[in-house]
Length: 231
Image 1 (cartoon, rainbow, N blue to C red):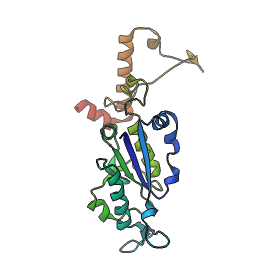
Image 2 (cartoon, rainbow, N blue to C red):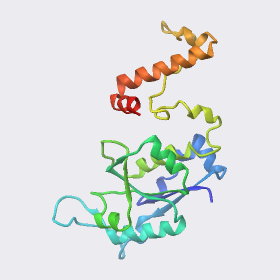
Image 3 (spheres, rainbow, N blue to C red):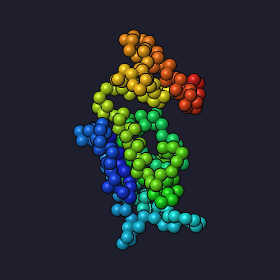
Image 4 (spheres, rainbow, N blue to C red):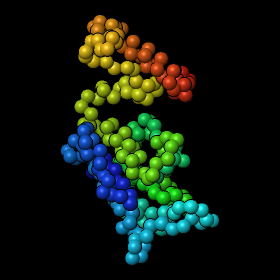
């Protein structure tokens, strides 16, 4: 079975969305990876397929029920038992390129998309669900975050990106941000392509790119630079 992304969501119709375009879309059409959706409301309770209830202890909003979510998670694990179950949550550990690469080497991912005020804590503990965040901000639900995580993984799968070398110097691959890129025209609005890139001296070009990557990382992400210099 190819690498499989299984999405647990109240809105299965929003997938594949942008994942059907460009490289990920071509890979999906060619069977290099799979995308499955499981509608959480299929496991809802009663005539209205209820999936949420009022928060214990009071407060605003609604909370997704543990019994409903657990039933969906169990169904997903039955499809791809070796795929980790991940809840997209602002309180999770930050998604990194290293984590995306690790996930891309496995069987796939099962992604739980929350809504409302979140998910009953008990199901996260009972099903040993990992929490991952895209950053220090809050979205209306996990679907957009799930798409971003999937794209980060899928582009690392064999056969998705035509030239594997194009991944070598991307941001974070070597602990640094990526160096600047240029193309024609040679001069634009008074700004010229750095002469070293037109020299034909590949050793000097490589050094320039490395120097630029270090400079940009040092200026823009001192946290990355600190880890890089200590690594």
